[in-house]
Each structure stands twice: as C-alpha cells, then as structure tokens.
Length: 286
Image 1 (cartoon, rainbow, N blue to C red):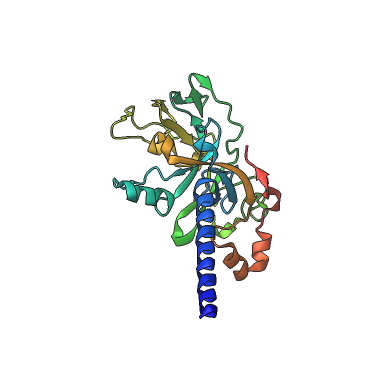
Image 2 (cartoon, helix red, strand yellow):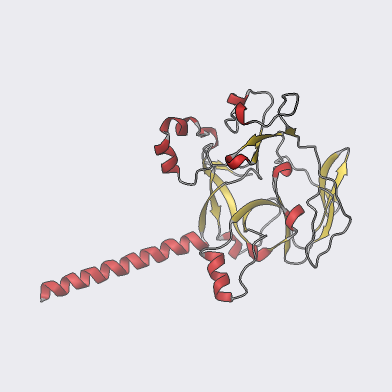
C-alpha cells in the first residue's frame, strides 16, 4: 500500500510540475516575449520573408508605443468577437493573424501623405519625415504558388541568381511583351481616387495622398516597403489596444516561407543551408 501511495504522490507531483511549467511558458509567451516569422514582404528590406524575430511584449504594459518603432499588431481587418471571453481567447490564444508595421504617427498627430516632385512623402504635424528605412529597391514580380503574383525586392546591379535578398528563378519572373522584367519602383505612387476620408465607415482608398487627424487612441502604421504594403493607407488608423509587441532582433534569416524550419531542412538540407542569410543573424532592428 505504501508503495502504491508513493507512486500516486509522485505521479501527482509530476502532473503539478508539468502544469506549473506549462503555465509559466504560456505567461512568458503571451505577455513577455514573442517569436515571429515574417510571411510577407511589406517591411522589405528591413525585414525579409523567412526571417524570425524576437519581440518585446512587456514594455507596452508600462508605456505607449512610440513613433518609429516596428510593432506587431492584430490583423486590423479581422472582426473580433463581441463576447468578452471569446475576444480574450481570440486575442491571446487563437484568432487573427499578426501583422508587422512601423509606427509613423502617434495619437493626436496630424499625418499627411502628399506627392512632391513626383514622389510620395509623409508629413507629421506639418514636419516632413526623414525615412532612411524605406525600401530603396524596385520590386520584381514573380509567379508564386497557384500562379499568384509575388513581389520581391530586386537589386538591378546583380543577376537573378546573385540577388542579395532572395534567390529569384528567372523562369518565374513576370515579363512584358518585350521580354523585360516588370519592375515597380519606390518613387512610383498610387494617386488618390477620391477626396473623401470618412471616419465613420472607415473608407480608405490605399493611395499615397491622405490627410488624417488621429484620435487619442489611434496610430498610423505603414510598411517600409511602401509599394508592397497593405497598411493604414488601406485599413486606416489602428487602436492602441491592437498593438501588442515591439520587434527587437532578427535572430534567424532564411530565404523560405516554410513555417517549419526542421521540415524545410529535412526536405533539402543543401538548399536550406544555401538559402540562409547569415549576415542578418542576430541583427538589431532600427
């Protein structure tokens, strides 16, 4: 009987230890530190598809997000449940995707996008922003899975095979009738199709021409890859409660959109190693 009792106590103790450990991991993962994979090119070339980033979630419990910070946010196009319990589940456990953008303007700011000398620029409180982080390279259009167009940053100084950001297969490049690659340059802009900016039903036309007075709890977010980013020009201002982490370090970088690194490596170890961008490992974000 004593032996059975000891086994029961040992099993109970192990179960409690497991539950406590799991609770600690969940708390750290949800409220303190996050790890994120970059799925799209909206922040190129600051962040590239396939990179893994460390995020600080703790800071925003003590201070508000600041202009210039790269943040993780809840998909602004996702409609959260009106039920408080379900909303908490969606917010912290399973729900909308996480997006990454840069804070351009903070609550109370007036943010304005205009075209100057044929190029899009941004003003915050009538001060023109200096944005050295913007993608300086044109985007090349390639055929991705299911034939959909996938834009990628392209350096014209290098061949397709020697690109510094992505390995580009020339056969996948979308070309015009003359056989030239279709490029979208950073200075190209999307002109406004309407002068109406309605706050009530959140109508935005995605153009580089806009003028918005932010409310006390609203932020204006944009991608560093302005020609390849769906951001506040499309979905409007973002509430502070939907911004939950600050991106801090790139800890790993590989030219792959596979979410499981181990499987990616096992499928083709040589290609995986060749696709690693070792010069971007353990890199602090600016």
